[in-house]
Amino acid sequence: MNKIIKIVLISTTLFILFFIISLIMLVQGENNFLSRNISSIIKYLSIDNYELPKRNIDILEYELELDIFPNEGIIKENAKIKLVANDKSQKTIELDLYDNFKINFVKIEKTEISYNYSDNKIEIDRSNILTDTLNLEIDFEGEPQNLGFGSFWMEEKNNKKFVATLNEPIYASTWFPCNDTPADKALLTISITNDSNIVSLSNGKLKKTFSGGNRRTYIWNSNYPISTYLISIYSGEYKKFSQKYFSTTDTMDIDYYVTDVNLENAKKDFAKHPEYLKVLSELFGEYPFIKDKYGVAEILWQKGAMESQTITGIGSNFISGMNFYESMLIHELAHHWWGNSVTPKTWKDIWLNEGFATYSEALYYEKINGFDALKSTMSSFKSRISSESEQTLYNPGLNLFSSVVYNKGAWVLHMLRKEIGDSLFFSGIKSYYNKFKYGNSNTQDLIQIFETVSNRNLDKFFNQWIFEGTGILELEIKLSEKVISKNEIELKIDIKQIQTGYENYHFPLDIELEDSSGNIINISSYIKGNTTLKYKLKNRLKNAYFDKNNWLLAFIETETYR
Ligand SMILES: [Zn+2]
Image 1: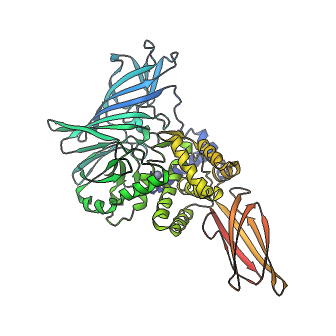
Image 2: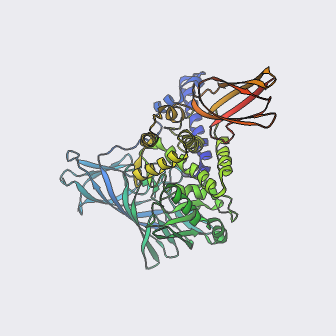
Image 3: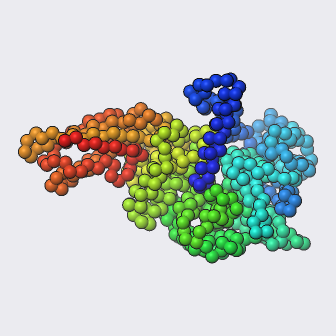
């Protein structure tokens, strides 16, 4: 997902926190609420913190048939689900499904069976059916709830109706029954029927379309496994245009779907996708969904963009005709490697999605425009991270889409690159991708790959930047010179860590010293704790640069004493 939405989420979170705090004040009449531990308050009030279902099942395939009636605001849906349930002692199969629908019937192996439908779950009796693989069928209808960022919404613009979905993180079951965890990937076929003037889009490849009466059906099929949060439908009066992407072995369609008013602007903005695909494929490995497609669809959600698998949705107001939001397009495409192909096991690992997609923007600009573009992109990411943030990168709780997750996530990868060097970093990225593509990984899996490729223990690096440290590194550096003799000056550099979010970072620091005759000395020093460095110079110091190439997530203040 793109970061524009973080503002909304932060304000929502702040509002929730404010509400909780106010509530506690009311209930307990306490004035010292600010000293309370916020995370324990959240736990206490059982606010949804994205706990995932732990079920002993594995969904193999979803086959969803949706009839959409935008005028009535309802859907009629038939969901066929093939799954493996090995544990025979388990008498019921539980799936997520918001409990506002009218269920017409539930079947296993074409036989109607009983079920319990409450608490946004459907529990299906399988006590008489003891095969490992089960074929369920759930037929239902009603008005889907629109939760989270807009899990299912029907909206009208210029007398034209649009339907779109955005499930991330845990709202897929507002419109289809599922095992709603990113770790349970499955194959997917979606059939969408709407009024005959409407184009209906989804993940994967278009298998066929057909009309009946004043209705039109589109059937989409994914050749690759997909997580529930990436399953999406967009249905509206779209205009289509296309490009081709030529890989070394395949030719793939890039399809764009926009409203007629944005057609010309979109043609300008989207034109460079073949180049984005080429550059990202060179960096990480071939585009993962090459037998399906890549697509971009305009949506009426105006908070950003969403990387729905093979069909990114982008808000109308990010189509400018002047390429203002190019980094957003690169970001969503990059998610197809990072998030869609390699998918986090839990939402605690969300930085693996957003940090990688954000760093991909910087890597793209480095490839196209050179090292200075990398430096300036990393600077802009740094400026978005508050040194006072109290959030660790791992397990951000409710703040799944905060600035820390995106920008510090990107920075951790950037610093890892400095820590182990370009060649090990990029080969590590490729082995990580190859090992986990079309599957799931977590932060531990990433650490293990990089410890293997670098043959180093990286505990300290990951502990300080991901698991324990909050905010960023802050350095106070004092330089002082002492004249020893005519051609000998002693330079003393006192480096002090003054941040509050972590006690003692270890990090490589590049120092460039320039003396009054223009001689330049480059030093790379590995700093552990507060440190004093001493150097002998032949002339007085003219300039000193610390981390000139922007490899360190730090605010650095320097003072010189003469
Ligand atoms: Zn994103």
